[in-house]
Structure formats: C-alpha cells, structure tokens
Image 1 (tube, one colour):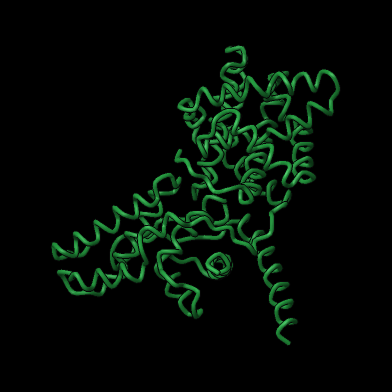
Image 2: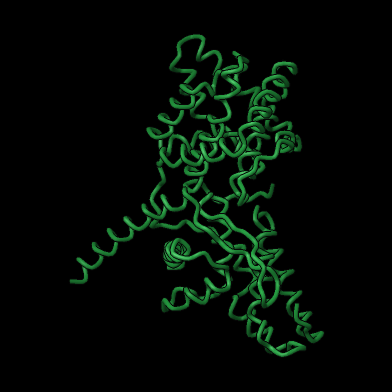
Length: 102
Length: 274
C-alpha cells in the first residue's frame, strides 16, 4: 500500500509542480488536501530528491521574506514528458478500476 | 532561524542526527537533510520565541520517524518504463547547447589522455564523464564542470578493471564481425554509471549493466545503434580523433547519460554512497 501511495505522491507532486513552481513545505500543505496521501510529511523529501536526480525536477533557491531562502522546485522538459506518460497510465488504471467497481 | 529552548534544540538535533544515519548511503543525503531542516524552519515560522519543546515535537511527529527516510525505495509501481528517445535527445541537446565549448574541451582531453596513456585512463575518464553528466543534469543551470572529468579516480581500479575486461571483447567482437562487438558494447554500455553511482566492482558493474540492458533489450539496442551511428563507440575506442568526432562525441555522451537515467528507475535502489 505504501508503494502505491508513493506512486500517487509522485504523480500528484509532478502535476502540482507543473501548474505552479513551489517549495517543499507549501507542497506538503497542498498534498494534504488529498485524504490519506501524506501520512508523514517527511516522505515527500526523499521523493523530491529522487525526481531531481532522475532529471524530472530542478530546484532553485529563492529569497523568502519570512525566513531562510526557499528551495523552489520546477518540472524540467524531461519531467513534463514523463508526467504525460504517468497521467496516461493513471487514467488507464482509474478507468479499469472503475470498471471493476461498476 | 528562530531561537529554541535547549530541550527543543536537543530534540531537533537528535532527530536530524537519526535522519542522517538513516540516510547513510543515499546519494542525495545532504539535499534531503537540508530540505527537512527548511521544512522545520517553515513550520515553526509563526511560533513565538523561544520555540518550545512541544512545538518542535509536534512538527517532528508530523514529519514522521527519521528512520523512515532510509526506507525510501520508491518502486513507483504505476510508473511506466520510460523509453523516450525523443526525451533523451531533447535533454542531450539542451545540455550540449549550454556547454558546447566545455564539452568539446572534455572530448579533446578524453581522447588525448586515453590514447597517451595507452587506454589505461580510458575507464577512469569514462567514469569522470558519467559524473560530469550526472552533476550537470542535476544542476538547475545545467552547467558542465570540466574538473568532474577527473573526479572518479577514487574508483580507478574498478573502472580500469571493467575497461580491461570489456574492451578486448568488444574490440574483438567488432574485428570478427560488427554484430558481436555491437552487442557486447551495448550490453555493457552502462557499467561505468554503476561504478560511479553505486560503488560497484568491475564485475558487478558489467553484470548490472547487462541486466539493465536485457531487461529492456529492444529499446537499449536501438540506443546502442544510435550511439554507434553518431560516433560514440569509435570515439571511446580511440579509433579516430578527428575534429568532427570531437564535436559529435559529447552529444553521444549526453544521449547515453539520459538513456541511463531513464533505464535506471527499473534497476534496484543504490546501496552505496558516492
């Protein structure tokens, strides 16, 4: 189950970041809107690092008025292509599972 | 950073130390620890000073047990294997355009030193190319750093060993007939990445590359064919050192690197720090 959750997290992170560049803490707050997705907030950071290592995300430090500089994450060209494949795979899974439910 | 009470400070330091231990062997350890520290700072930003033990404990509890950071081996079961040649070329061209002169210089140094050392430095320099690529693609500005070419001499013996084991077989394969050489070259084409990223031995790295390639054979053969076509293999073998080769070779390196990155997600998680 935790592996499925991580896969979902990856999908959500990339989709959120494609719409809007943001930093880790803000991303956690946004992901908490999905019930049960973020069990422990720390899960997200190894995942972000891994996506960066794979070349799907890049990061840049941006000054923050409220404290230390924030590390903003951006989806790369390669990341966008990967995300398109993930979204297609996700739609196929959802529609197949919905078929079982109905 | 907000001032903490001494108990709160100790609790946070203990949490970070346990997280650091859990992340031992993780290549992105520093990055992850910094992100955790940033997260804690953000979460405590609206707390009055000095920040109390209970406030820090609440933030750390939400972050989860520090030992969990080391358990992250995200298989991401829904993620499809990425066989995106177009993506490889897009990434490669972007890196190539941004670092044209540095890459040409790297190609020249690579060729000269490999030949001058009678191919002894071929393996270690190939490891340096892998590190150069991995570092550049991870940087937001995608800058290639020339000194990375010499950064893998700490893996000198495995890189030399893998080169000694694989090169004669590949050359012989090419000499006898093109196909066996091409097949062997393709099957072992990612070995240097396994040494650089995972600290594997020469034989382990050749085996890991073999498994990675055969796991997705048709796509990797296509990549091998493309690399061969754009002059990568002749360049590596030092069979020509002409100026056109110096210009084309780095593009091959970048495609090779991106192909590895795409395939790597199907390989087992790294266990050794680099």
